[in-house]
Image (cartoon, rainbow, N blue to C red; front, side, top):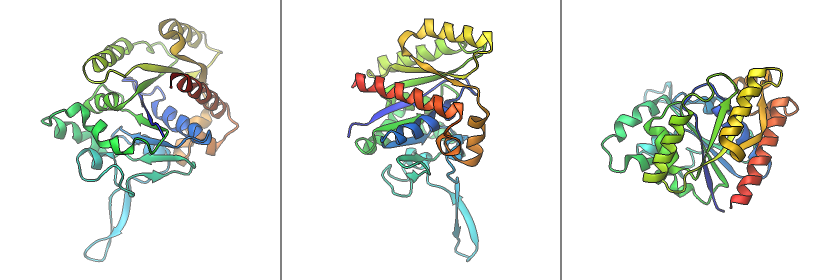
Length: 272
């Protein structure tokens, strides 16, 4: 099995990165792919959105119930556990979709990695044992150009950029693309923006149509034709810890993510 690692990135927050990561991951799993989602954001929204608890109960040395953090990506990056640890990779409710959770502790990893040699390649090295065990590894990145995000780009084969259909959509994109070029030149020659996805789109708004036109001019055939609509069911699903396919598979958001994933798979198939 050849594993394709995709970093889902936009340094602007609230554009649908985690929603895209969870729901494209679920759609890929439904299509018969074995998918691992790694929650690289210290906020841990992908972990919560897939219904995985961030803490587990145990009985301490005094015989009383206590809690400890679930094994998570921080545990891997700081060298406490191996990426193949059976307690680390969690099964989700969606068959074929697995998760390595995040933790607020991840916000401290950048200081811990600062003095390490090859600090930009810590994630790449850590997840190497997972290659060949999944069809796709999806990296849900934080909304910043941090060392965590740089590690994600170094570990990735390609980038998917979700872009919200709003006035500030193009702000920061030039900086993001410059960062990708630098990473490609210095650290990861195979890195490229392979897919761009428009999110929170409504054809009723002229502004959304204008943003979509501008993004298409800028990215050309890298832009997926399917647009993810504004959909309340998509917003509700994470509070139930489910991808949209398990929450309401007939809603417009679920149908759009299924179509976008079909496009994604067709392009990846041609690329391979």
